[in-house]
Structure formats: structure tokens, C-alpha cells
Image 1 (cartoon, rainbow, N blue to C red):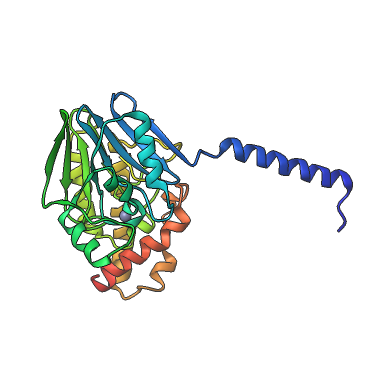
Image 2: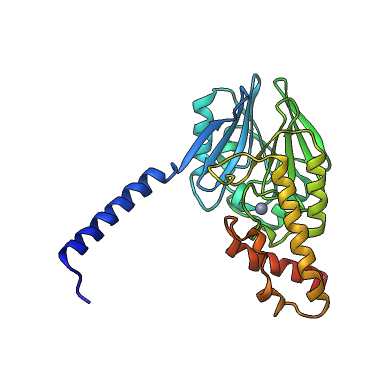
Length: 295
Ligand SMILES: [Zn+2]
């Protein structure tokens, strides 16, 4: 069917309008924001990944240098810190060992930062030998408080969850936690399920709920609009994991994994959540592995 001239014009106009609105709506590639209600706590976001840094009178405590997927992100991160303060970057803390958050730490090492991680993270990174990921200089075995310039950052090892190397960082005075990949804010865990420990993860969430904090900075911007999380978000994700687990358990024990249990996996209550379609197969696969194979 031939399109008329007015239809073509209308199409062109619509395309232009779409471009216009997309440009207005698209967030900048990276951004640094001070957390409301604090003097010295910042969130640095690059693409879809973000980290917390804290400026103290004796230097900067930074976390997660961001990713292998965006070469140069960690250099931008250091320059963004430099726009806020001339204090030396004393520490770089790895939230866990996954490269989408911690590859690219060299600019921080070059700036003189000491890299801190859980001891299991160092073991894993030592095996992987990723050329973009410097090994930690210091490791911790259990919950430890790091203090710099009068600011305390509590590094909590809460056991197995999304990984076996996760540190949940808490600023006791500011009542803020930085938790990466263990509590998605306003979205469902999908790829975060891949090498997770689902049952122990529930225990971690209960421990996080018992901690004293008001605001959660997630490792990926919260939905909608990059919001921070609350304890309600933790409860929501805990409930989601418990329901997903319960739903697969019986068919798995009846020998219905991988098929048809994975194909049948639907959780209509969550169908409006961002990432629902992508998350369901990954969630189903993980719980089929757990209840169907013991993995
Ligand atoms: Zn991860």
C-alpha cells in the first residue's frame, strides 16, 4: 500500500518528536549526586551502575570502581571525586567480586587508594586474574568498622546471598547502607540470581532489616527515577524470593524441572514490575536448580 504525502509528513514529524522526547528523557551518561540530608555522602552513577563515596576531613572513602563494560568509567569516577574535594582517595572498597561493579580500579590505585574487600573476594579474584581488576590490598573476614576523619563505615559480611563475597556497607551516623545486587530497588532480581545462594540470601535480607538505617543506596539506580531504597523494598524482595521459591519447590520435587516447571513459571502479582519478563526464566532456573538438583 502506497503512503500519501501527508501520511509521510506525519510520520517524519512523529519521528522528529520521538527523537526530541528521547533526548529530553535520556539521563546523562554519568552523574554525581549528594545524598539528601548528608554533608558528605555521594552517589556516582555511570550508565546503569552506581557507587557511594564519602568525603571526610582526612580523605575519601570510595566504593566499587564500576565496570569492565564501560572502559574509562573509573577515570571519570576519580575526576568526579576531584570536583567535590582535593582530599586524597584513601580507600576503595569492593562490594563483592563481580566485574560489572569492580573492574577498572587502577585509577584508584594510582591515586594511592588502599583496596579493601572480603577475604573470599580476594580468593576468587586471585583465581580469575582479570587484567582490569586489581586485587585487594586488605581483606576482612567478618564485620569490621573502618574509620577515617571521624567518619565510620561499617563493613558487614552477612554470609551467602547474591554472592559469597558481599559486604553491606553502613554509615551508622548517617543511617545509610550501600548494598549491591542483593536488594534491587523497585525492580526484580534477574541476572542477580545466576550464582546466588537463594535460601541464605533470605537470611541476609532479614539481617539487613534488623540493622539500623533509613536509606539504601543500591548498586543499580532504583526504580523509578533513581530513587534510594527503604526497608519496605527489602521486605518486598524478601517476599518475592520466598514466593518464587515456594512456587517451584513442589513441581521440582515432583520431577518437573527443568521442564515444564520453568515454562510454567508465572508470578502475576509482579507482572507490572520493571524487568518481569526477563527475570522470570532466570528466577525459575535458579530455584529449579535448588529444589530439583540441590545445587
Ligand atoms: Zn553481582
